[in-house]
Each structure stands twice: as C-alpha cells, then as structure tokens.
Amino acid sequence: MLNRHLTVLGIESSCDETAVSIVRLKNEFDGEILSNIVFSQIDEHLPYGGVVPEIASRSHVESLGPLIDKALNEASLKLNNIDGIAATAGPGLVGGLIVGLTTAKGISLGAGIPLVGVNHLEGHALTPLLTNKVSFPYVLLLISGGHTQLILVKNLGEYIQLGTTLDDAVGEAFDKAAKFLDLGYPGGPALEKISKKGSNVRFNFPRPLLKSHDCNFSFSGLKTSLIREVKEIEPLTENDLADIASSYQQAIIDCLREKSSRAISIAKEEYKDLNINYFVAAGGVASNKAIGKSLNELALRNNMEFVAPPIKFCTDNAAMIAWAGGLRLLNGQKDSLEISVKSRWPLNEMKINGGMHE
Image 1 (cartoon, rainbow, N blue to C red):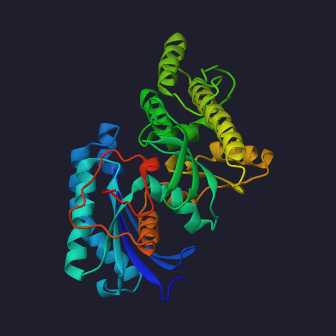
Image 2: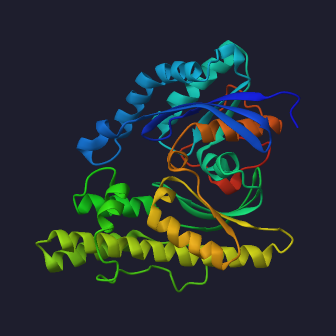
C-alpha cells in the first residue's frame, strides 16, 4: 500500500495519436484519471488512406508540448506535483516512439523524477484494472490494428501467450477490406457502420484456422477472398456493399469467438489453481459492438464476466501508459536515461522489474 498517492504523467506516441494523461494511483488496485488528452492525426493521414510514419512523427513533435501543458492544467497540477513519468517505449513506429520517450527523458532529468518506459501492449492489457476494477487473473483478447493475441494475465509482469496471429492483425483485416471497398479512413469503424445495414450470411467468407486445435489466428486470406467475391458481382449496389461488409465482419467475429473459447478452456484446464473469473477484450478493435456482443455471450457460457474498457480507453491513450508505468514504479522499476525504443516488444517477454533491459 502507498503511504501517499502516486501521481504519474503518461505519454503515448506509438502510432497516429499523440496523447498525454495524468493518473493518480491510490494503491495498486485503484487509480484516478485526472486528465486524459488525445490529439488524433486522422485528418492528416486521411488523404493517404493510412498512417504515414513521417507525418506522424512530425505531428507528435508539434503537438506533444502543448498537450502536456493542457493535461497539467486540466488536472490543476504543476510539474513539481508529478511523482513519475511514463512513456511508451514500444512496440510501435520508431519515429513516434523516439519523440515521446525523448520528451519524457527531458522531463525526468529536468524535474528529477523517475522514468519508466512502458510496453504499449501492457498498457492495453492492464487498462481494465483501472477502468473496470477487475482483478488478476484474467484471459485477455488483445485486438488492435497491429496486434491480435490471446493472453493469460496472471499478474503484473506475468503474461502467458495462448495464441497470436500468424500474419495480419485483426485491425489490419478490417482496414484493408475497408480501403479496398473505398469506405474511408479509419477503415474499421467505417466497415462496422455499413455492416449494420447488411446480411451477415449472404457471403461465405473463410474462417482461417478455425478447425485447428490451437489458439492462433490468420486473417491474410480474408482480403483475398473478399476481392474475389467483389470481382464476381461488380458493379456493387449499396445492398451488395453492406452485405459484403456484414458477412466479412461475421467471419472475423467467428474466428475471434472460437479461438477465445479454446483459450478460455486451455487456461482453466492448465491453470486450475487460478480462479479465472474475467474474460477481457482490449485494444482499438474491442470497441466494435458486434464483436463485444459475441464475446460477452461466450463469457456467459463459461460462467465468466466479460469486460471491455470504455471506447476512449480501448483506442490508444496515455491513461493506460501512466497507469502501467505507475504500477511498475510501485514495484520498484525505474529506467535509466539510456533506455531505448523497440519497434517490437512481445508482451510475454515482460518481467516484473525488468523493463527494457532485463
């Protein structure tokens, strides 16, 4: 337990959102979000139909300083009220990571406060502890534009990978399909929106690896199948487009549900000593309502509670970075100014006090 509250400033700059947040940890199980500022670069990347790393890095440089000031003002705090600083150190786009981590190093050095480099995936993985007050252990489905993993979260720094994608992440599967169908950017929300108007059974898209006995995913063949279907019926009517989107989304939902079901069974069978009561979805794709409905039904069938953070904390944000960094500060981690970024940083390689260097 803390003798006093620990106030942490978090910085997130791993992709196309620049975010700053201040979180006050009351103890290891309770935190309060004092401010949470997110600047989205969607308009800057829109003409290109996807994230351009150079544009993202430049935008981070331009916006990060003012966002830090805004976060402090919103929390009614000054820099000397901050006990620690946490910044995403990986995985992600190297240019953006460098901007955020370098800024955090400067603040750490100038203000004399400890620095923690946070794994972006760990930020997502630990968010439900902050926003939904769940407790360890839980089965986590981490679904985003860059990641699709099933993980048993036993405790802070104790992550067992049960399954992962062998090619594209689920967010990529949504975005690539949306781009091909000319639905706009960002693709995932656009495809979800139009799918509500269509039939999810008209087109029989493949469910890759569905019959395999492991918990791994594969989504790369889905887009190929979609392209083939579109070419067979072109030109598309509005109804065709909605039916394709809905059927495509349903194929993804079926894969996520069935692989999650296997992961839950494996976790409960192989770790009988653990009392696993929660099934958690995190990451940007977890904001998809149709996916959430299916996963909730799965949890109920397994006598578990389904949890997904509020939408603004599913997508990239700095509150999750401040929270994860604060938990590591409480457990004795403090990174040196020599810490470097990592474009790849598997969550299951994390350790309780290891940070980047163990």
